[in-house]
Amino acid sequence: MKDSKVLLSARQIISIDSDNKEELLIANQNYIEAVCLSSIDELKHMLTVMLNEDYMSFPFWARLLAFRILCSLTPNDTDLKNWAESDISAFGGPEWDNKIKW
Image 1 (tube, rainbow, N blue to C red):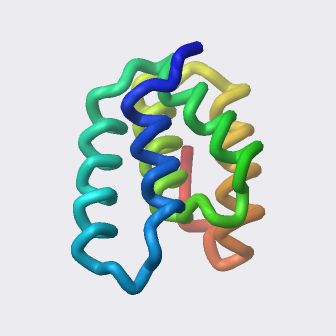
Image 2 (cartoon, rainbow, N blue to C red):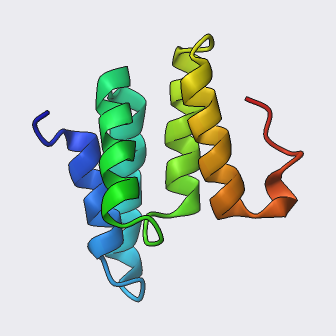
């Protein structure tokens, strides 16, 4: 799959120095817009690539947003829900175990 806008914006988030607040804010806004306007396939591809390329640098809020939208768009996809739950639980820690219901 070609690099979509959502994948490019996800990569942009992790490439910006956190001290550059204005540039990071713009990158975050671009990512949120891209996630909201992406297809199911684009979102799945972006998550697969980002979690394989740079698992620890991809922000928790960014993966949570993408998984939440995906699970909302495909409520009967148990494989996706299991993937989301596994990733969020592993990355978010035990304090998230009872807070997120997919």
